[in-house]
Amino acid sequence: MERSIGEERIFSGRILSLERHTVTLQDGSVAFREVVRHPGAVAIVAFADKQLLLVRQFRFPVQKYMLEIPAGKLDAGEKPEDCARRELLEETGYIPRFLHKLTTIETSPGFSDEIIHIYVAEVEKSQDPCPDEGEFVEPVLVDSKEVLEMINGGQITDSKTLSGILLAFAGRESDEYD
Amino acid sequence: MERSIGEERIFSGRILSLERHTVTLQDGSVAFREVVRHPGAVAIVAFADKQLLLVRQFRFPVQKYMLEIPAGKLDAGEKPEDCARRELLEETGYIPRFLHKLTTIETSPGFSDEIIHIYVAEVEKSQDPCPDEGEFVEPVLVDSKEVLEMINGGQITDSKTLSGILLAFAGRESDEYD
Image (cartoon, rainbow over all chains, first blue to last red; front, side, top):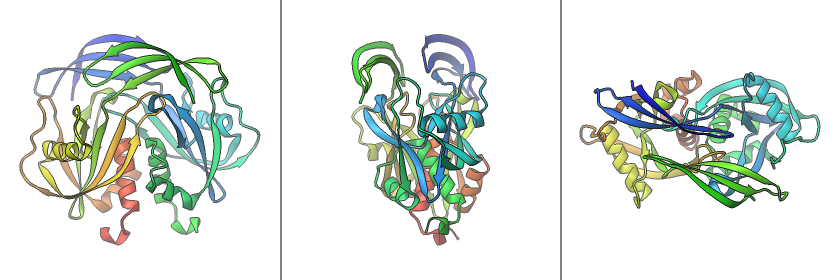
């Protein structure tokens, strides 16, 4: 257990804020903790028949295009399941026939409070994507069998995407993908 | 592709720094990107016979104890494999008989450049743990078969831990754990 005995607000931005805490450690000594606050997010492992629905987008912090499961930040007061349906529709134009909570992960608990609620869904096309202004996200359908090869080959490396897909696959009968 | 046309250094701390970039988007419009810079880290899926070697520690940003694979930040100029051996020894007192690179993940590519190099290892006890000052980490051995139940039960939720363990399991024959 570490207890905060002093808090400094360093920055408050559009998607995150930063605090530095003075804390007492287990042995009573004093240390500092830099903490990135994030509103939390949802992500969806979306199966469209025997394909997985992914999204491709440029990620500025890592300076590359990444292939990820559809995801997005929670709006203030928004229920995670509502957020999952909203983000799926905005980014891909698909809607869930079936939506099931898989787990909630912490992405970087050493320096951030970001959590991501991960759902697994069976989805179907409903309309064209309608991304937020300034959001450039390309839906990509990948055969379920190919996804594991892409993970092993290092083409899928995002932590929520690996956690979600591998957990969904572990919970399904392997013959569903044959 | 998003191009930085202006950069503001907001904070430089002990484990992270924060920048705000002005960027041009795909359609030529202008937006802001908040970026948390991190030195990068390693993590090890460590098998001790039929058990997995995990560590339990309090994570201040999420205010709880978490069960994770052994991990730690890269020192300046340090090779990831050297860092893996060092962190494993410091946190657990174990050394690898065998160490193999599994993948490199991005933990939160929407707002951070943090990457984690994940290794899988067969390990054996060498000495007592020797954690850094102010680091309180408890090694925990868990039966490999039990780990999946803990993941499904929401007792293991850290993204690098889920990614690493599930990927290591997907690459191994299931009968190795019977």
